[in-house]
Length: 147
Image 1 (spheres, rainbow, N blue to C red):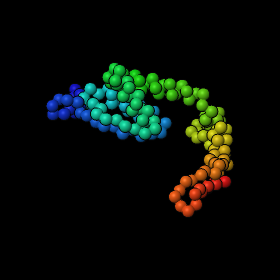
Image 2: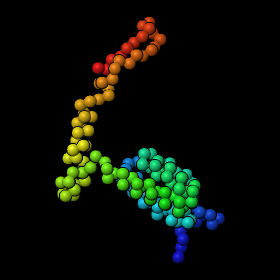
Image 3: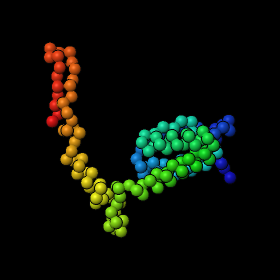
Image 4: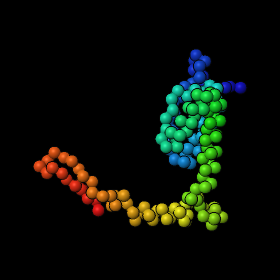
């Protein structure tokens, strides 16, 4: 049985990872990382990420520092299990009808609809007070009102 590709020196193949963001992508990436960490011929030389990818990277590095690849796998599993448990209390959930009909959208979630409407009505750009702007012109002070 072949254990996988190895460098000519027999050392592990070093790879760098750039992990993408997005909640569902982050959970999917956890599974991919978990599988890759099982491979003894593969070494992670560098890792970076954005959003959920950055969380995966930080958790992986912390777990790896404590107990190598097995520590990284355990840390990632613990992290994503806790994220999943916390989501149970989220107000942004599918309605019971959406669950029953198998729809994977928040379009009818009462909290999502309320927050979406508020974001369309109230904007921080229209409710901000006048902001003084200091500049070196003939006028000593300018004030811009956004309201």
